[in-house]
Length: 196
Image (tube, rainbow, N blue to C red; front, side, top):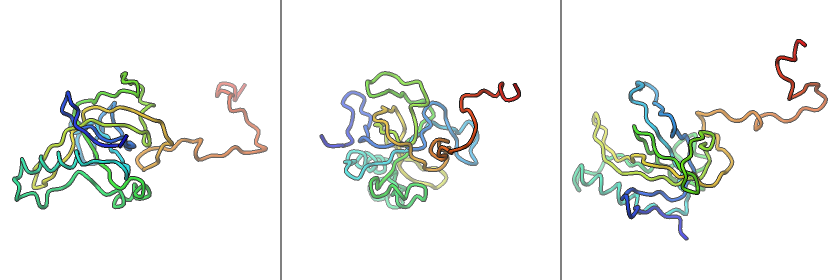
């Protein structure tokens, strides 16, 4: 079975290939620097594997640009398909994931697990987990900036994988510290026992 994007036959939403998520803000919205709280959005960035077929996504993006700007005015329109090698925090993943896409929404997306049942635990959502995302392409023209982007609809969480430290997040303490021999201390001792 090929890892390809497709149009959902019932909803008409664009369905991504299986990708790896980074910087997910699915349960609570986040805002970019210099934005106000009411500009905060739910978002997800997906790393697209080199063997994935994203023809359907590219076609939808091109169609959105043509519809908004006309067939002859699409030059200079910003693409939603960004090269991973050109983003400092992602360049190390470029060989396996040459492109990435970010999808955003003011509304909270639905999040389901592999079984299709709703997931409410934020611990299940982390940079590095495999997923599939449903979205819609749209063109924008804001303050002279023209481009195409994707509106986030829903996310299906798939296989677990090693978390990816791509900046903007804290790494686990276990990944930074090794066990130290010959040091007295009890990991299970509570702070109430220190002065006892």
